[in-house]
Image (cartoon, rainbow, N blue to C red; front, top):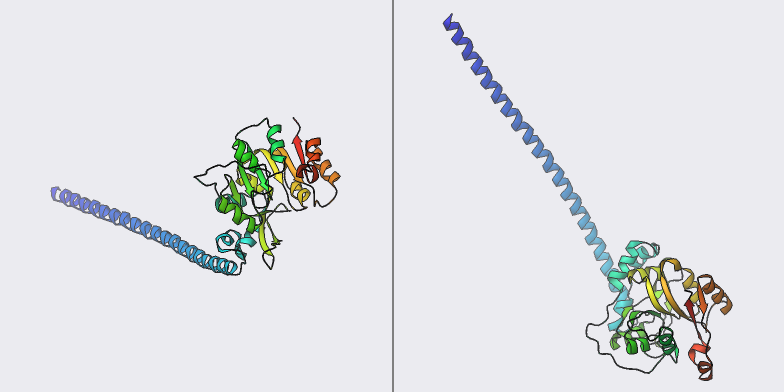
Length: 317
């Protein structure tokens, strides 16, 4: 009887041992399968990254080739044409974006806006705006540190409506320069303001436009950005003075702008070549909450540009 009991206990011990061995083998097998699965997943992810990287490299090469071709065919001076060179792939992708698209705003902010110079020595100039800068300074009670946006001001000095404010009262802001030749003059003269080498679009999306340069033939293609996107990229929701000279397209530009999203206190709008009647522009500005500022006898006596060509609109309080 005792012998039988010993034999049974021995068998049970061996059975338990084998069960433990089988359990250990099962655990190892499961761990091995799990490791193999994770390795396959990791390899799949790496393959996908490699494919994406390869695609990006090919796209980058296409972009570089496209850019170099556009650059080589540009008739603008070397130190300026970099800013007015547009690869077809970039133009195509940007022109499909709406003015509210964050990608478009980010592109303008990151790649197009040019900071003011770090070391700037201000000089006092005469009022090249032929009375307009002085009128604006009086309207703001000679306020210092104001913010302006100016579109279309010749070479940045002559007939600029913002230079007087910048030099006399330490204003700063954004100069939007569609003309490559004038941009070169501004870029070399280092005004204390941001620069943007584009034209303003007549639509709520980017577009290309031909720009006639008297010194260059043929015409130069300039990329145009929506005004809304430009102001958002510049992070300018409150602007003291906006000077707009769009060569007759002022009303088309203004119609693209959601006025309720910005606080623009005064506009100076060139009327000399405006498409449509001046009355239509005035009606539009009135509908947006602006009053026309009347001219003064002094300006009219002096044949001021402000009296002859430009009109100032002041936002109603």
